[in-house]
Amino acid sequence: MTEPARRLAAALAAAALLALPLSAEEAAVEKVGADPAPAHAATRELLSLVHDAAARVAAEGVEGACAEFRTPGSRWLHDETYVFVIDLRGEALCHPGQPALEGRLLLELHDPHGKPIVASFLRELENDKDGWVHYLWPRPGRDTTFYWKSSFVEKTPTPGGAEVLIGSGVYGLPMERLFVVEQVDDAAALLAAEGEAAFATLRDRASGFRFYDSYVFVMNPEGVQLVNAGFPDLEGQNLLDLTDEDGKVIGREILALLADRDAGWVDYKWPRPGDQKTVGKSTYVRKVALPDGRTFIVGAGIYDD
Image (cartoon, rainbow, N blue to C red; front, top):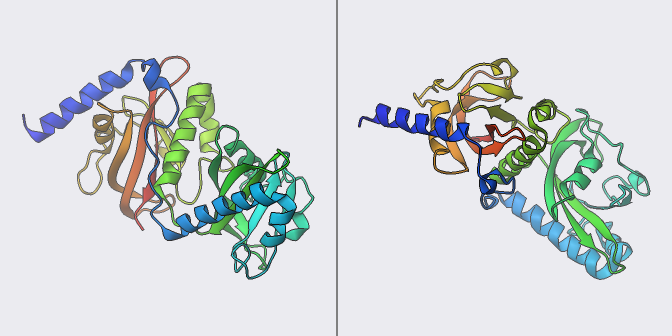
């Protein structure tokens, strides 16, 4: 069998597979694989900082730990780095980056896109011990210009038994594959729960599904783009046979990949939102079953630096 014929047969088999309802095991929206390890030192350092800060709070309590977190020049507070502590009602117990926020309920705090920042922290921790939130925030001690910031948050118990949220963030943190996997898994869970009603949230800049230059897309097994938050003009178009500049047939590559697995990565050339120049992109895609039994494909990607 020639290579084009093999690819076509694989794509047709994948389309037939995706048109069928998923099994109970496949329909689960839990992670279908281990998260990729952080690729960047800044990400690893942030994870270590928050883990260690959570351990301090668990051992010393909020007041004892926050006395350390407020010490200028310490590991916890230097340059643009600071650790914050928020209770599960959304009140800032410790915020060395902006001390004026301490003692305030922050559930109504939004970034310029309307993303509810602290509410997003708490939502990340509803079903998990930790998670990531990406949003726009001013740098400490500077003007009111907003910059992308990625914060890692972790829930930890205090000596008194109450649970609090510990977090810290980095401005302009390099994109990580683990961010994209979490983004797609969360989108799959939303689609599995709400079906097409989730489309508006996936497109919304105030949601957790759009950050930096990453965005979610949803396609059906025939290759029609149902959601494309980065390139909304593509919605409703069938891109099954769209090729990149290297001749890769992107839609069929995705279907072929998912013919024998639930999720995986596809590499191709694609422009960043708002740009026309194509660059390398790695996209994580997975199958998801909607409440009505249909199966869609949801994905998001990371561009080459």
